[in-house]
Image (cartoon, rainbow, N blue to C red):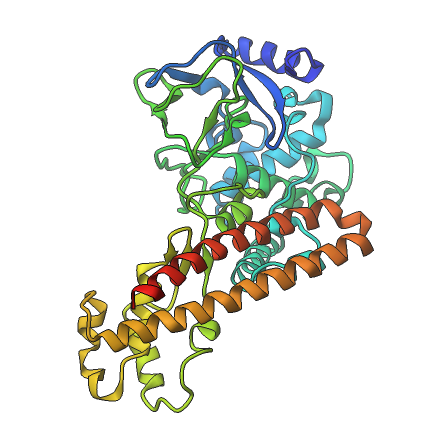
Length: 414
């Protein structure tokens, strides 16, 4: 139980002043998930977990009503909703004890574990696809920072210190991660002084302490009648257990990229097959290979090819069946995409290739785990970051082992 801690006592008082008092949940620290919310009493299926009044939400309306509003309204081109929220967070964190949002700000993480915040040498150890997405994300945040420096400079009259010392890249990255990892979804709103980008994010103090589990279902939305953000559980919860919500049916790479954690035994976990790996075990003498790849690309079958707990996905097997078509059967490619069986030989060949790819990825995962382990010994300062990457590879290894077993049993039937 962490409700006795000064920061939570302050937060409770602050929330009470904004017409919110919670009798169902208390802050607590849990093994595995860390800080979260615990049930005070048994929760029934369909019961309201939390109902947070609009007055507690931090939205773009909050920002525009604040001292920043006049500067946002004057600035052209109009700042984005995301930039408005990030600017407010950085400014209020800098204000410290003077901030009206201090009780909320002081319980926010000081640092984040999303790949965009990890050291480059750690990012280098991520699966290729995830590494590419991390670099895209980093470029996006860097572009936001660079393009916003003029706007930040316009805020100088509000501060005694040089603006660059307040609105640094690291400060913006912290604010961006806060919004990206913790915001809840609201119906799109339109503020005249903001750009046309989606204005659907709100920060929800206290509610955002609820951790993710892929094994629960909840109904969460802003209730226009009560003017509260409400969450109802679709599954029960025993007294003094951690109360979870589900951020969505995300695989572990997506969870790590967007939220900075990996979910053990995630039913949505999968391992992605890159285009290079897809063709690695196909005959290099196939003169129709480029045409086959082109067909897969045109029909959206070159991305999101995966292995899961129950073996290769239908998309992966379909792509392999098309790639394994013999020259005389090539005209049947449309039937393959529709899921039709072309021949026993084609079925067997595609399963053989799937098995080889699976074993290749198993070896790759094992090698990466060894590499991460060695680096943990050499780079003590990066141990926590490396442990996160290690967990991802370990979970991927488990998925591939399950897939290998499924493929072995399928192979026997052929």
